[in-house]
Length: 189
Ligand SMILES: *[C@@H]1O[C@H](CO)[C@@H](O)[C@H](O)[C@H]1NC(C)=O
Image 1 (cartoon, rainbow, N blue to C red):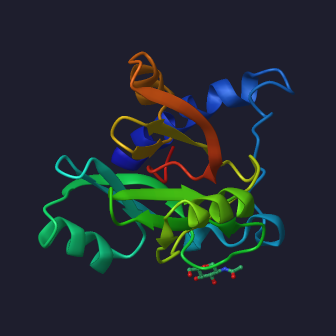
Image 2: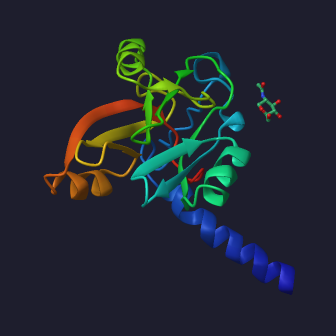
Image 3: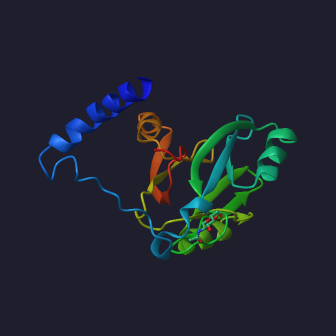
């Protein structure tokens, strides 16, 4: 009896699908990222972020020991996962260079060799690069926005259009465009 009722339930669930006109509910996009163009997206890892209200700095890293080092000894506050990226250079990805200004304390990230060279001329030193991102919006990736607060010498990156808009609403922050393209912090998004 129980399995009979279960069967009825299953048939009822199937009914709308069977009855729907062809080309509507059947038209499900099943394209998946292919390793040949997207790298192996199963290898994507969290890009963690930590903020220092003392130094006015935002630090991003895929390396947990780096995050715990700044959160512990340097008193940064853990901010969670900013995005998912790769920690090795998968197909189609480029390095997200990390540069660091250790006098005014500013963590700066760029995929641009030109920006990297300019930063090195302007007193930044090479930080450890441990994140790789897409240079264009492929493979279900989303923009990783960068903003800059010149008064605080502080760079900030986010995937959130809302967070970006609210910072830009304050005159302290300037838009620095898109650093690269990353996967959403939530793997199911
Ligand atoms: C993708 O990565 C996962 C986890 O590292 C691994 O199990 C799988 O074999 C990889 N797939 C390909 C196509 O390399």
